[in-house]
Image (cartoon, rainbow, N blue to C red; front, side, top):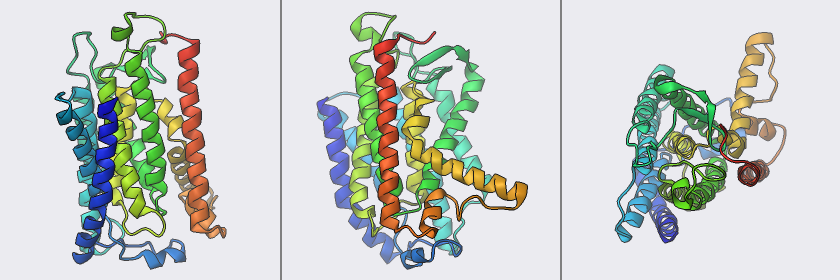
Length: 358
C-alpha cells in the first residue's frame, strides 16, 4: 500500500509544480487553444489559453509510477507497463493532433482517417501484447473472455477477436473523454473519480487474489498484477488532481487531445487488465452520456434533419439553455460521482453474493 500512496503523492506534486512551467512555455511558444465559432459565445474569451497540458499528466503519471517502484526496489510488471504504453501511445497521437491545430491555426487537427489509424496502431499493439507475458499461474495481463466484474467464461473472443475488442474499448473510452473535455476541469475532475475507483478495485483484487487466498473458486480474483494496476491508477489519479488545480474554472491550461486521448486509453487499459470491461460503462457513466448525446444528435440530424439538443456534446446544450458554466461542471461532476459510487457498489455486491462467473 505504501508504494500506491507514494505513486499518487509523487504524481500529484509533479503535476502541481510543473503545470505552471508548462503554461509559461506553451504561452511563450503561442500554443494556444482554438475555439469553435459555432460554440457558446462565452467560450470565445478562452481563445489563446495554453493547451497540450496532457503532456504534464502523462509525465507526472510515469514519474509517480517509476519513483514508487524505485523507492521500494520492485520492478514494474507487464500489466502496469502495458497500460502506461497505452496512455503514452495515445498521448502521442493526441499531441500530433493538437500540434497540427496550433501550427495550422484551425480547430481540426488530424483528419479522421489519420486519427483512427493512430488509435488503431496503439490499441492493436496493446491487444496483441496483453495476451502475452503469462505469469507462473498462467495469467496474461488481459483475457480473451468478456468481463463485467470478472471474466465471463461463456463469452470468449479468441485472440483475434480480443484484439478487435481492445481497439473498440480504446476508441470508445478515449473518444468519450475527448468529447467530455469541453468545459474547464470537467473531464479531469471526472477522470479523478474513475481512477480513484480503479485504485479501490485493483487493491481489493490484490487482497483477494486466488493465488494469495489459496482458492481457485468462490470470491477470489484471477487478475495478473493487481497491486501494480492499483499503483498505475493512483499515479494517474494524482496527476489529474494536480492538473485540475490549474485546469479548474477559469482554466489557465487545457489538456487538449494529448490528455483526453491518453486518459481514455488508460481507463480502457485498466478495465481490460482488471477484468472489468463492462463495469467501465457504469464507472465512466458521464463519458457514456456525453458520447451518446453526440450519437443521438448526429443520428437525428441525418435521419429527420432535426436537432435533439441545442448543441452536442450535452454539456453545451445546458450552456446554451442558460446554465452558468460552473453550474454545468459541478452538476456533471455530481453525475460522475454517482456513477462511480454505483459502479463500486455493483463491484462489491458481486463479491458478496457470487463467485467467478462461469
